Length: 92
Image (cartoon, rainbow, N blue to C red; front, top):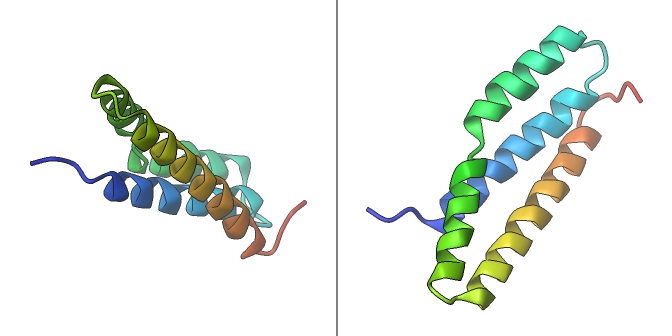
């Protein structure tokens, strides 16, 4: 079964949101931030799948699809991280 690019984008966007929230949450210890950030978010998100899918689009000569996929993935991830950081009481 083929992997949908929207599943990859969705998982990475949710992971970015959680990481943005956790990295900005007031009162969390460094250990807790690292555990959730590197441990949970790192294992939850799918960077390797993201890159392999983009490479597959390029190999299939779908440069437009690859650029669109990479743009949407990066834009949604950055936006989600910012929103996640703004949703919690910030330490910064």
